[in-house]
Length: 224
Image 1 (cartoon, rainbow, N blue to C red):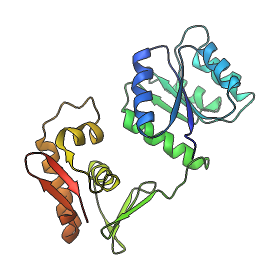
Image 2 (image 1 turned 120 degrees about the vertical axis):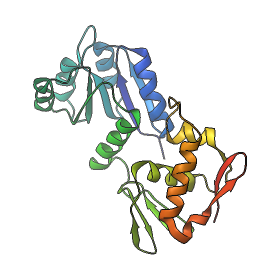
Image 3 (image 1 turned 135 degrees about the vertical axis):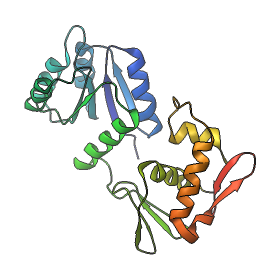
């Protein structure tokens, strides 16, 4: 299946890279534009962009102008990014047909979750991303985990951790790799954070908790 194509528009290269890295890690193809004028050119050159992440404050043509221009031709989903948290800006965005409105600074992981929610809503991605292993069923779209049909109540981070383990079955994962993948590459935490979460996750999984094996001196492995 071809990767879904997202256009990221921001005059800050660091911000574009941050957003791009997370989208690429989640299997999207990313196009970049550094100003509004370039964004409009790229959008009309390509005919398969499924979503636009658009900064408000930009040179040449701001986000509002870009949104108006594109909305006159297309209903492609648009997420607006802004440094402001002014209610009037937000209302203006929705009046122009913006699908989501996110204020900076934001969590890249939350942004990716919003992207996926919008694309599910517009039927661009499947709503049934289900992983099953060792009697555990994890539904990524619905954010539900069940064991023998019974729902297991996990925190957001426990769900992310279990999802990461199940997607990497049989692979030995170091604590550093888990931190980078589940807690973001900009997380400067202690490896004991992982041990604490694994302990809680095993407890909530009950008898199934034994599928998460400890690899002494290294990390963990999900093995049925």
